[in-house]
Image (cartoon, rainbow, N blue to C red; front, side):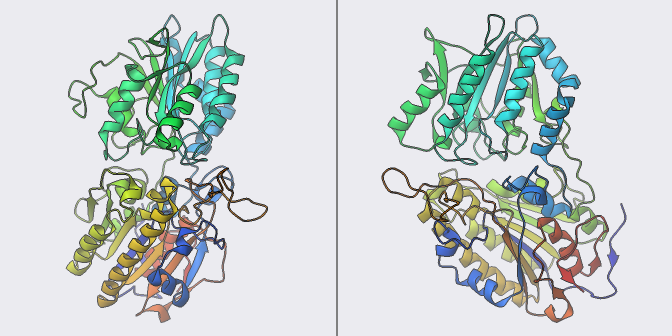
Length: 549
């Protein structure tokens, strides 16, 4: 790797440079359902009024996704922010591999199907939607179809209901046509059916070890077949909606049973595919399947002898899982690699919910550090409560620690993620998300005072939108869609809106020009901008800087 070269035009900012990622805070001109606009945010308003800023792309091809109809997400957003480049991401990699047939030519797929050729069951577990953030139902369909073609006799599917990257109560829109799809495949030689499921925020898909009990419930549901029994997945969804009045992501676990017995427990000799392509919510369940006798996160009760594989390798450093179907993107020449080569001390901080994003994803899907000496990671433990109950989350505690680190003088470059706009936005609660934005704004005010005190600079941006569009919007009218009772139809997914990029500099802004007239930048241009402001030339393979020196 070539080291950073000092710039001959600008020696760099005097104090520290701080990147603030306001997770899930996009830009929308639409007032209806816009919690960012509705919230009382005097600091953010002042930044957008008085400081140079751009609206930059954070979705679709700008972050390596297949089309511009694909919403961005925190994983690909932080990959782009941290690498300065756009790499083909999980969804695109998997789709290309399926289209070419390469996935079915892999040694892993061959081993999975061969293992169950003489009587075992091939199981698929994953997020059941076409949200294309963690998974896509078309990938599942392609694998089930191929399994039949290759002579697999028994397939069971364990569905994690979405309601987060897609409509909040859209589960039946996926279950009903999928059941028809299975009925079309089913034959005397091919036994296929849904075996279990539950809401993604209740079972299986925990991340960053925030709540291992979710994984425990998933294990008991999918593997052991323990839990409340239903004849069909549709029955489970309808019953739970009537009883619990919650959206899809919060529906309790269910087991499909016939004559009182689960139809699809996972047994010795079976094969299991976790078909999510995104890694953060796939790692823990993978560890549960692959963990040996020293696994101590929960009592698995029974550990079947299976061949387990992920759609991708979810952690390239820890090699989780051991087997996978599609090679993940190889992200090289990241910002941190270059800063370390220049001897720059840096800090990454967030709370548990987004800690991996400012570390693992930012550094190109790398768990370890490039330098133990020059990199510091700080994780503030997240509360294990529904986010709408405490929409401020840990933003104050993060700011407390970040201010301490800024004033220490140790770090030239610091980055922080505030999860509020995204994690609270996903709940679908407009009042809670509005509150979360106001809590975040208070912390921005605190931080910027310290940045000024230290003659520093802050770059304020986001990884994708969410809080900016809390209602489903009618594309023709631009107004919110409504439920039968007249209430606005909540939107819990990310958005296709751009995000802000604001340069807060009260000391050296006369030394460079922000290219505010341009409208074609994306998140991947933040890295080059960062090293320019630190007084270095950006590497040639990175996307163009948003400042002209």
